[in-house]
Structure formats: C-alpha cells, structure tokens
Length: 473
Image (cartoon, rainbow, N blue to C red; front, side, top):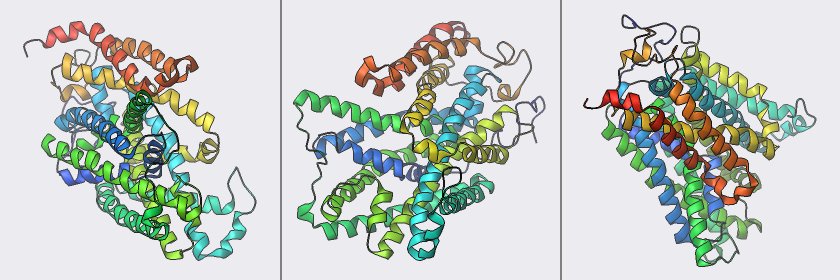
C-alpha cells in the first residue's frame, strides 16, 4: 500500500521501494548475462583486430571494464539507498515529471536494441531448427515484410520466450539470469575447445590483424579500445539502479560488480579471442560473428550447443538490458495506467513494429538512430551523478519522490527542474556534434565522456542555489 501523500500520478507498486534481498551473486549473474552476448563477442574480437599485441588489448580491456565498474558503482548507490528504479531516481535531478525525459531516452534506446537482439537470437534459433528439421527449409523461401516464414517463426518463438520470462516479474528474471550466465560459459568452453582441437594450437595466433603500428599509434589505439568497451556498456550501466535497488547492501553490489565486470569480462574476452583465432585455420578465414561460426560447423551436436548458447546469451542480455529498462521507464510516464508488465509489453510489441531486421540490414540507419539517442546518455550521467554526489551530498527524500505537493523537495517548477533541462540541451548538442561531425575524426569515440563532462559542468553551475541549501547537512 502507498504511504499517505503518495500521488497515483507518480506511484505504483513496481516503482515504489521494494524488499532488498539480492546478494552479490545475483549482481554477478546480472553482468554475466549482460556481457555474454553476440554484441559483446563481436566487440571483444574487434579490439584484437586493431593491430595491437595481445597484452596491449588485454590491458585496454581491463582499463575499459574498470571504467564501467566505477560508473556502475556510482549509478547503483542512489537506487540501492532508496530501493527505487532508475526513472524514479531521475526525479531527484529532473523533477517528478521532468524525469520522463531521461527515462524515455533510455527506454527508446533499449526498445531499438531489444528488437535487434531478438532478431539476432532468432537467426541462431533458425540454425537449430534447420539442423533438426531440414524440411523447414521450404519455409525460408519468400518473404513477408522482410522476413521469410521461417524467420517469422524463429523471431516470434524468441519473442514469446522472453515475454514469458518477463511476465513472471523480477524474481523470475533473477532466477533466469542466475543460471543462464554460468551455463553459457560451459557451452562457450566446449565450443572453444572443439575449434582449438581442430585448428591445432600451433596454428592459432592471438594477434588478429596484420597492421603494423608505431608506438604512438599503439598507445592511441589502446585508449580507443578502452573507450569502446566503456561506451558499449553505457546503456545498461546508466539504468543499473533498476537492479541494484533489490540488493541488500552496497557492499554486495560492489562485490558483484567486481566479479561480474573486470574478472568475468577478461575471461569472456580471452575465450572469444581463442574462438575467433581458431576460425582462421578451421574455415580458412577469420569469422568474428559467432552465429556464422556456428552455422559453418559440420558437427551437429557442437553446432546445437553453439546455437543454443547464443540464443541463451541474447535472451539474457535482452531481458536485463533491453526489457527491464523500458518496462520501468514507460511505467514511470503513467504509473496509474502502466505497470511494470504493461511497460514491458509496450516495449515488446513496439520492437516488432520497428522491424529490427530492416534496421540491422541498414547499418547507417542504426548508426544515426541509436547514435543520436546514445549521444545523450553522456549528459545524463553527468547531470545525475553531479546532482546526487556533489550538489545533494548523497541525500534522498524518498517520500518527496512520489509527491505532487508544490512544496515538495522535487517539485521545482510544475514538476520539472529547469536547471537539469538547461544543462542537458547544450551538453547533448556538443555530444551529437562530436558524434556525427566528420571533422572530429576519432573524437567521436569520446562523445559519451565529453557530453558527460559538459552536462556535469553546466548543471553544477545552474544548481548552485540547490547546493547552497544542502550545505552543512
């Protein structure tokens, strides 16, 4: 039951404070599901193709993932402290209604990637279906709205599987990710072992590029590699509070983040590189798409293990990174009408109408659509973190998060904090300009951080009066 004074325009049971009983293992499993994906596989493999030595890439991976760990810990604290999800925490900085701006930005990014990841997983499922039911090949002929009948069958099966897990709530999601992440490791080790056995250890090289770089070029590529890793996880790290809210303590969050990020990511990356390196002697060419690798395997059982592995990984990352986020974000818009389940259903149905297979087949469209939204993530980091840690000194008025009282802590001006909006606009313009301006060259890799710095500085300036009111508390 909501406390007296809580507004139905801001509160429902999904958005309000929850029981905190998650352990460090649950957070560790969350990152297993988030890291173990087709996208993570390709990113890790691509870094080894930059012309760097193996130790240089591993160094960059460690630095990049430690940056992710640092920000994950920062973003976790307010939600763990108040036991509320990311969009509700955004009310602190943006106002009780202004929080819909950052929430919808994050929700739309997740919705786009939810559709794309489901499509990628459906391709792996198609491999399994054709291996065991070759007669289904007839359904691969012809197309309707860009997909064959077999493509639609695989896509909708995965769509329904994810919806079933999600529909049973966060406890079901926790149980799913608790076993799926570790299970993926077993399957990946089997697949890597099979590829290495057929390649022969002496035929495997862990430098996946024939580029020769100068020392300065190597240093620059190492920095870029670290930034790529940090940028890849920017979305799920931003709304990490959706999961840390369930944790019993920040100590448990930090422990889970340590094992799930630097330790887990390095092991995953090393396994990925072994698999990619082995594809050259086995298939005669380097393949960095794990689904294509699985499709070429002539051993039915190994192919089945591989395909099911990447189906599971994609379902895992989709649920934790691209399903939970829009569910809370859309529920935040109209809590009285939209529950966590309804918000997730909106995201799932919306992902079908996006026709992600067409997005995926048009890399330029993906780049501009998702790039434009992602460029705004940096400013959101800057505003939210500076406001919580520097301006408000880590203090939260939990009751004020659900109050429409004009005298409430987070009412500001008609429920919107104009300081946050004024900081977001110039920071987003700078980030977008750097991200899409060809004249900036490699600086586009840093748009996330530059936008974050600009957003933080602007907000710190505009919120001087708020900071003064918290002095001495």
